[in-house]
Amino acid sequence: MQNDNFNSSNTQQPLSPYQQPYNMPPPRKRSVLMRVLLAATAVIVALGIGVGVAYYMDQSKGAKPAAQDTVASQTFYYRDGKTVLDDAPAFKAHVLDQLQAKYGGSRLKQGEWSITTTLDPALQKTAKDQVQTAKAALTQRRTASATFMAQDVSNGQILSWVNGWDETASSGPLSNKKTEWGMLMLPVVYGAYFDSGKGTADTMLDDTRGVLPGWPCNNVALPAQGGNCLYNYDQKFLGPLSAKQALGGMRLVPAVKAAVAIKDTSSSPDFTHIVQAAKTLGGDGKCYEDQQLTTEASCSGAAVLGDGLFAQRNSMLHAYATLANEGKKLPQAVWLQVTHDGKAIDKWQQPKSEQAIKAAAANNVRTILADSTVSYLGKQSDLFVLPGNKAISTVAGLEMSGTQAAALQFTQRYVAALWVTADGSAFAGAIETSALAVTHGWLAGADK
Image (cartoon, rainbow, N blue to C red; front, side, top):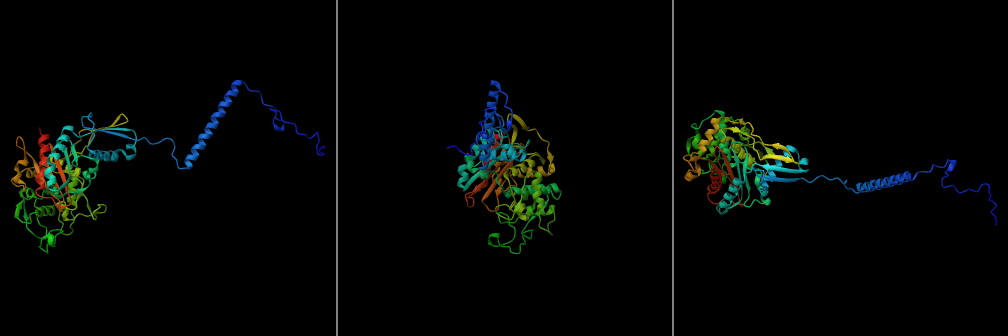
């Protein structure tokens, strides 16, 4: 049946393949080349849209763009620039800390780094050998770990750095964490005393019990029994002593009196000037309220004795290098050249020295510490000389808790130090003698 609505006049005719609505004229025919080009363009556009969608989807999932930061590679060498430094993890960590401070942490994560360090391969071996040789004697005296460092006095370069018995990364935290100055602080105090002009090696200091800033001394019992007087390590008082005798004997009471003579602390027991004396020589030092060393505090008279005054070991080494160098301070160096992506960006040059304290003051300390006749270590007089009768300045002793000790020796060419930590209890026996065997052995090897 015919649809009544059907009308041939309004029947829509199919459009020609080239006919567009609204009676637009048909497009012109394209050449074969043009059609190929258009097809290729369509493919490219489609791919672009696909990549864009995929990227958007990745971004919506928190994905990162394809480009990633380059992982840095770092190669360390001994000072010859050829021998790879494949151990000494604690030293290398310290080098990286210095590089980060200078160039920024983000840059260190990019590209290839080549660092020619200041470590001497022969002297590093000497240090390892000396530590290993002394290990039995040190562990017999309840030593749990040891750190050795040595520096060239003439240029500030660290030549040896051994951390732990086997130089493994696991012993790294010991290497350069802050530790108390301990007895190493006393020569710094006398250096400031001589430099201030308030005393000379012959000036008399009174080694007697009495009131001192931080020690009211109204209870003369021993500190372990609740007393509040300052006692020397041997719990004796020797009366009037020259500064030479007091420093050589590492007497605590005269050291505090020398510090007070530099700056009157009667109105306020502030010993900031003693901390500054260490910094002047190239060391550092801070006092803290908490055992975690997070909250700084003002330093009391105990800082004169290195008690509660914390610093990094390499800074202590640096301070003694200045004393050995007639009071002339040089920057401490740990690399000779640094190359980044094949380009040398840092090359060590001999720096100019700074006269930190008077030469006479530094030489006073050096000669006193080299005199075995006034040293409390005088019975080991052989430790005060090298072959050829060359004098060695020597200082060693415990920090106040008795669980850490240091031995440091220096000539006008080198300074060497060993820090040892007890296994949780006090050291057994004369730990100083065993530790000094390491520093003396290294100096003897370096002097050849």
